Image (cartoon, rainbow over all chains, first blue to last red; front, top):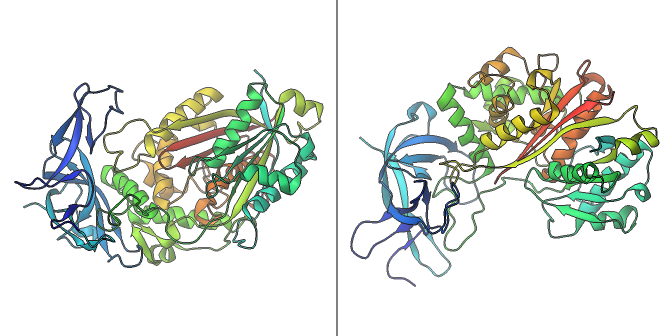
Length: 138
Length: 381
């Protein structure tokens, strides 16, 4: 078992010294930004030109839905959000610290990425995980 | 290149048939379609069989074990919710290429209940409810909310789609449900993923549909042109790159590309189409496709549903079968079931839900991941 939390997804990076961040890859030919690692660009087809980029912790809400029915053990309601990050990259996650009510959620609202324990979820080996969330930015 | 015609087509009544196997369900539709044109399995030169749940299970061959093992080539097809349309298109392609002149396409599915998608996969912990939601109701709710963002579309407008399609299905004995669902009932049903309530989600059902496709020469030779339906266009697209598509599947661009190609292939436009069966897997999705298929200008889809243009009797009736929302959505069968629906109208055999004077119809499906299949059909002259 790891003595430190593991990243919930491979594109969440946890440096030994420093703050966690979301990693993307950018095509050096066409500039397209992707979440996570890839070898080739699926926008322009360029090979071998993908460079890692640290994606911003600031963004704005692009779209969302409010989940009321999920699988057993998953707490509802919650807001499933799609966020465009400043400088490129679109990420999906839970929007927290906001009422799950469409009248309280505005398209384009500024949000920030925050990092926290993955809602207490552990894998079969007992490892804890670090995840990311969005919250309104003031 | 020869023209290709649907000469026999049918579907079983959609429902829940846990006592039957997938090949048995597929065989029922295959026999109905053969009976529809008075042909036998021995007349078929190839079988294209669409199924998702048992994609590695040789469903087409097992179907022939139910109705006649004639030794013909069998192609098993899997392409998410575009599976049936893809099987039909492969069959059509083989006739257009003049490889065969009489082939069978079958779509079949046996479904469980409950939420589709969101299962995750991969190592570690479940991401559902941690990194948003990957269930189908959520994915299509987010796609609908993008339309709300861009055009102000309301929960009520999305809900009206479900009212309409449930109403249409009261006239379709082969639909899963024949129940009126007034607007307040739809809007007050259990919320699944806002803005989709339970009545705004397609019904998971078992079902099958099949079509016999013939070359023009063969259709004439067999004396089957009276009820034949000409395939004016068959198009399949995948999703081109979009900046958000890693986290937000784009069902719009692949539909727009397919629609443009299909109208071009058929040499007509949306104004020439008399009825449409489109992929209303969720009420939110139907609204998007009014614009994607060119039924109205971008931003006008809400008005289209408000004004009743898309109801039976309206300017361009959409999903008069009841759609996936009420007829039901057996994933692999859906693409051929909507070809059955449009063909039935073009033949003037749709009974109470008949679209008067229907001459040209369009079918559309989306398989998330993504695939879009569009067919344009015309009553044979």
